[in-house]
Image (cartoon, rainbow, N blue to C red; front, top):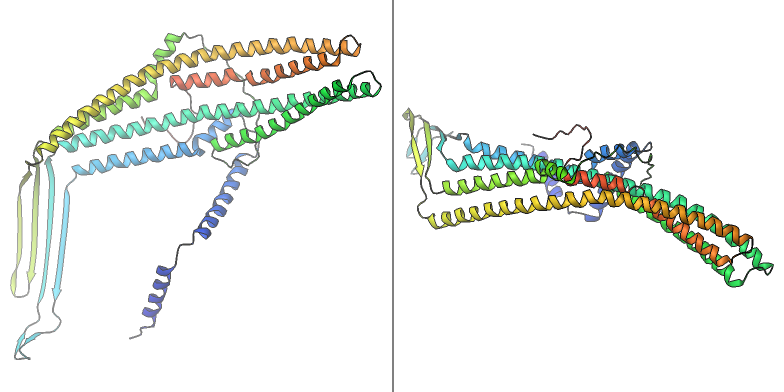
Length: 459
């Protein structure tokens, strides 16, 4: 017999089993593989400028929270299938065979027994007939599956708001950079003019240094805004499930449609009738009801039907065929105290679920009210910022002309320019606040629309 292959196999198995886990190599390999796949995906998705709708569509299928929500839904569905399996018959099959190749000898060969073979098989089938708790367990798992489906939908609605907020934050940073670039150039030109006047004795040294400070302030603000844009783009890319250090170009702000003329009361009623969180809370109360019924059923006996068949074959005996059919029941008499405690506990949990739903009811009313008022606050803030910028721009232009004519000192003109620049930054910061407030209101009402993807919400 050739034992060489056996020894080689043992050596290979021993080497594989003794191989230690190299944490550094594993981390390095995962980093390299993940980065390669991430770069390829990023290059494909960011090949052209992205609109807000493009970003939302990418986030729906690529965001990690959305993908985790889908996995939780899948786990809940599998849990429901597991609960359904309790209704199915339980089958047990066992078989064995024995054969003596040589005669058995006893007493040094004085007695010899003939060759014999034995074989037997058994099949046992148990069918649940009266197991009430299983029905309520399955009903609870089915509701939990629906909760997971609604939760996955709501997670995507939250992601829409996050994507919208991050998208407009990037646009604000880009416009702030444009404004600060113009302000820095203007401050530099002002400093050069005042420096020339100071050289001719027509301006004081402190006015020149004040102009220099104004220029350096705008240059530092521009550098800070550029760093802020890198951070804002990284946050948007993270929401999209892409590398935060990738290069992304945005297409600009979308056209906003007119806001429907809806009263606060109408919006609150709509939110209370269709908000996903309330739908999950309703189903959670139903789950608790099923758990109360399931705890009550623990007091009842479980009845099952069974069928058992056996087959035996022996060379020295005739073949035997046996089968029996009957009922079997179990009743746990000494678990009464635990059953009573579980029953009372399930009722307390049901009451807690009902209170949580009522608290959520009030919270949603407040969130809708706050979001409704937030739209008006954003509109007023942008209107005031527009007026302030217009007024300070006129003042700055007037003071600049008067300074050139020698009617006012350079300090007054520099202060007017600082007021105008601050007003311009505030104007840019408030430009998209209404659009973000609208998205916040949609989420508060539970009416955020999702783009069409290959992932459908389970009804």
